[in-house]
Image (cartoon, rainbow, N blue to C red; front, side, top):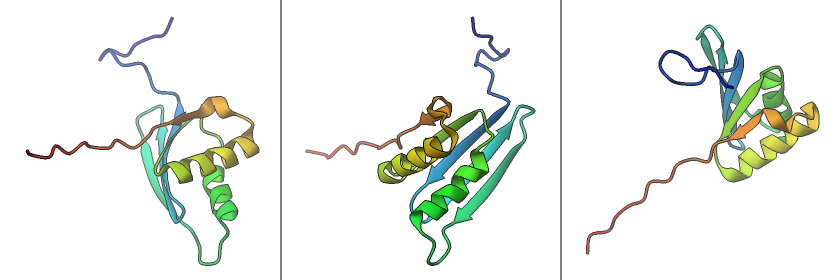
Length: 107
């Protein structure tokens, strides 16, 4: 049985990170159980390999109980593979595909 907060939502994990990532930067929002959030912008250094950049991003969220990943599909997949290779915890990943708005064309 899952518990609910008074507003009807399920409680958030004590440590949760949301990562928006592409091949040049990552925006990492860490949430703590007491509603504190920190935001970090991680830029890929000039000459840094993609693997090195992803390793730095993984290091920022390695201790979080849940990691929500969003961004372009190619970057999400690559980050998720790096994360699982280091942590062996695919169960902590939650992928969120970016929403695409449909445009209606007048006839």
